[in-house]
Image (cartoon, rainbow, N blue to C red; front, side, top):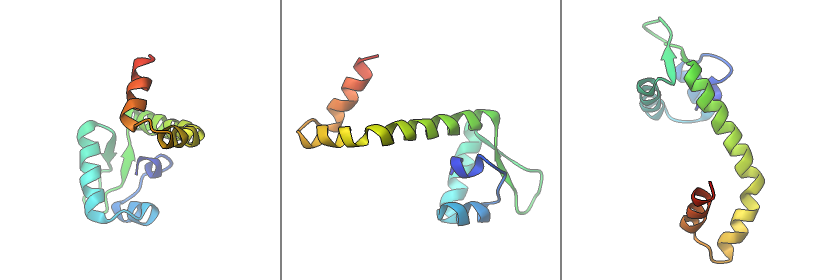
Length: 98
């Protein structure tokens, strides 16, 4: 959902059309993101447009970059898992190599 808000401010209906997430889920997500300070609403009372804050833009861009990295290594991770290494072990290895 953050990715859809990256380019422009959108209403809940527009977010629903773009992401194919149902409205109740969008309302829950938007309010959770608002409490975290990642999105803010416009001044309208009806058909509020939601936009990313500066903090939200940073989080969205970091998430997109992380997804790109995972797409590059996903086949290697699948191979490791098929060879018997659990996801938990992979996570431990990643976190211990810092």
